[in-house]
Length: 391
Image 1 (cartoon, rainbow, N blue to C red):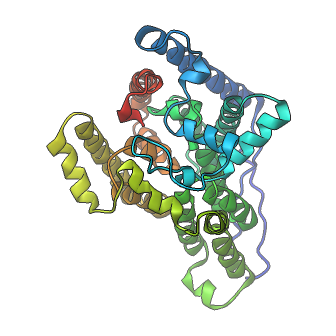
Image 2 (image 1 turned 180 degrees about the horizontal axis):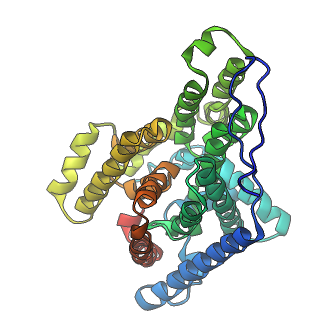
Image 3 (image 1 turned 180 degrees about the vertical axis):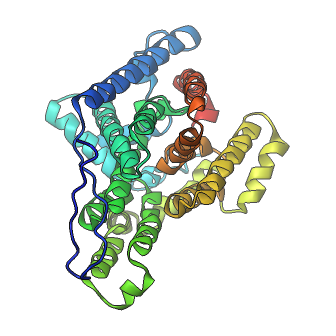
């Protein structure tokens, strides 16, 4: 069933090759695998979180509360009190919640009101629903790349138990960001630009770096049609350009809102200084990690790991994915080392690089999953105990 290809001829260019569009149907066997991966990962992560705080933290806290650390608290405040009119948080009173994009708390707040539950439940429900959606999307994306069923299934398990999967179980935007990114790549590979545009608006309203999806979308379109297509003003070229224009709309809408709220459309960027983030050379930030040692050295080592995966993507000529990974890792690194592992492993291209390596050497898969699960356990226990290196 999954090998059936639907060919849709493009009428704008007679005789052109139709886009590769395999069936999006998923077999019952694979649905069972997806459900198993989701449930097992939730049981493992929430169980690890619960026992982690019982052993090393506060004993009167439940597994959901344990996973509401750092950014999750900010999203709760947005749901319950809206966006701040002025900075008033953290020890210096110079932080505001403008740095956090609106789509995730909007959906979570709406679901909380609909079900008449507290905001934390809404945040966790949306995060887990988005993560569940990301699992079949990962399967479909890898099949779209013709990597085979075994590799596609491995990709599902790797996503479910990725080293930093704690963030996919918490009140963070990681789950939504991953699901939307996978959806955009899937439909961009299939040259279904309207779907790419709709998901693009959502992803730029989920995280400001979502706007950078314009680059892989453009690269994939150029690979599919060639640059001359865009000078002929064909229907296909118009669809791509229209998509590229729409993707930033989510971010632009938030900027308009911030301008009317605070008088500063870039308040989401300027408020970053409250967290000690300021612009500098990414290489200087990276080197400073080794100079400072401790958790900062760990963050710098993780940056090296990310660079290696990024270079591997370039070596495999995965230009669109490699470019997105480079941009989404370099921009945060220009303002500091904190959260770099989370930023890296919240990207589809990072996981794709590992999947491509194991596709070339399948014998690595058990070891990769074992190591990934071990790291995930360590990060989960540290995260629920609010260890700052997991922020």
